[in-house]
Length: 106
Image 1 (tube, rainbow, N blue to C red):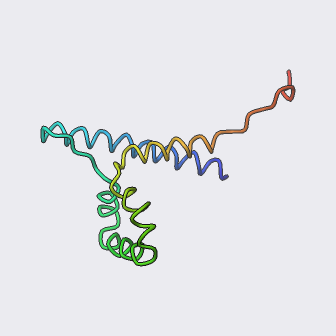
Image 2 (image 1 turned 180 degrees about the vertical axis):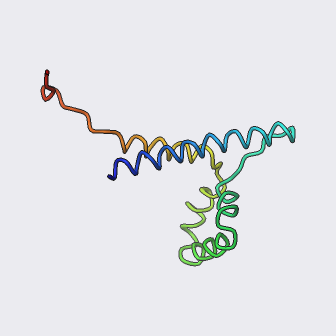
């Protein structure tokens, strides 16, 4: 069941990554400049009002940790992160390989 969930989420994140690449490419062509959607832009679009409160909560808890890990993550491009996360989940959800000598012949 966990493998199935990992594969489904991996496929969903892979699709989101490709949609993000197409969206960024179309925006870049239309504006004659390279435009990239960041993770914070996606969070604001999906979570609307809660994104600011989540950021304030993260900054209030550990400001140095937010500056070292949180801020660079939120400013990074969303499409490659979704693709890498999708590939990792897809890899985790693959069926186990049979060992050498454990296969059977019909």
